[in-house]
Image (cartoon, rainbow over all chains, first blue to last red; front, top):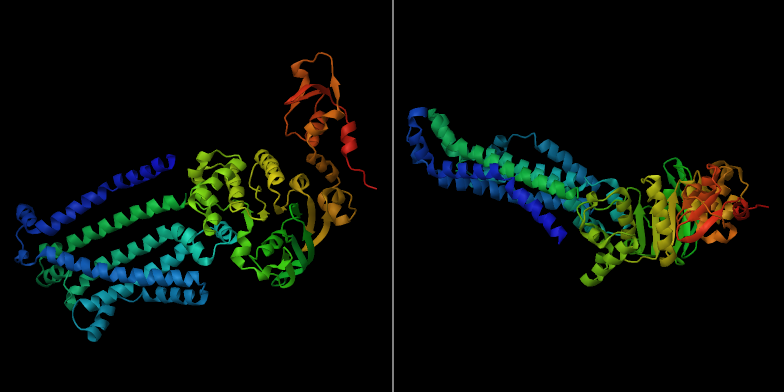
Length: 256
Length: 315
């Protein structure tokens, strides 16, 4: 009984701490669906756009953008988390350190260059972008999965071994739960990077929020640029906030 | 029964264990005592195969410990370590039931076991739903012992389990552990560097130094050992430490009752857990001559005769 009270306390505290994220969500919704109306209202302040900004259907672009990011990051999550867990449980230490140094190297490779290299192979369209973002998303998730699983204090690891947990039981009972904040951080970094990087997709015809930005740059229309950039910024802030709260929540839990 | 035969273990150039032979009898507490780095923890970790020896053989119930599956072997050996190593994201109850869960006990049996163990280590049942961060050091250590006893293993391996506690809590937990052991009769291997702790708890006392056993036997035998290294490590006062093993309440017949009136402030008062060492030390430091014991009617006069009778005479 006492336990239940404590748990609901943590839960309600968590929901209550999401005020900023709620506000961001509302703001994002308004921007995506009423951008043209906003521009009309703010006309005295920001002036008239150089082009007809309402040509772009922001709702559609937003969902394209979301689709690219979600598909790419989910795929990286499945592969990177699975691979990280597997090399950890099987204690493939050599393979693990090779993969880690490969990730360190891979992160230095520019996203735009990777997309450009993929176009001749996969052609114009969503596929090249999704695959490029998938590859980028792998690295932070993989490194953080390993870091998280190795983050448990020596004593606790030894207690788990001494009690007779097999490596996979140790993973399930202890390491995964205590490493969760690190793993969430990896997913967060991956998502934020991909939300921003997905705008480059417009260049290779993948659609998404990069479209108005690219056109805006070409004809130098700041309002058109903002039409693409504002939702990207708000989405990134929202995702960042949500994940940070989750990390904190799991951080408290894994400290008991 | 645990038998170690000619165990050797080296780490690089460092010899951690050098030809260890030891037999640990069932239902006895075997205390491994020695300075830091003498190999006592290494020895303990060999028994449940957290490490394996370079050469030599370890028999558990007359069978080589290599013939058991590692996990099965460990589940039959409760393991309690310094700093406890409780899982912070699990409640006390969940921590205690980790090994029973591995054995796939059903829910009611597990619940009953949690209550039984909490009661055994002297914690209220409500503690089952607390998290480790909500416990004091002594409480966490009690839960550590309860968790080690989880699925009622035959053996208990303890690596300085009370090492991080303050002296008062440490003494209390030692006494409680002896009470528990009296009932459960586990085969206990207990590592410590605290001479007093070893003297208080040992059925069998093993003194180690630089990877070797330099003395083994009952505490009384060790107290009479004349080996220079053993005496050098234990000090000349070790015989006195053995008074810690005798409870005052068990020896009341050796003291004269005081029949005249006595003022309350003229008395030294002891409780039921007080030992002969405590009464001796208290009167050495006090000018009083009378004492009373909680739960024993009457007032008694102190004299040193019972102490000297209990003190060991080595021939």
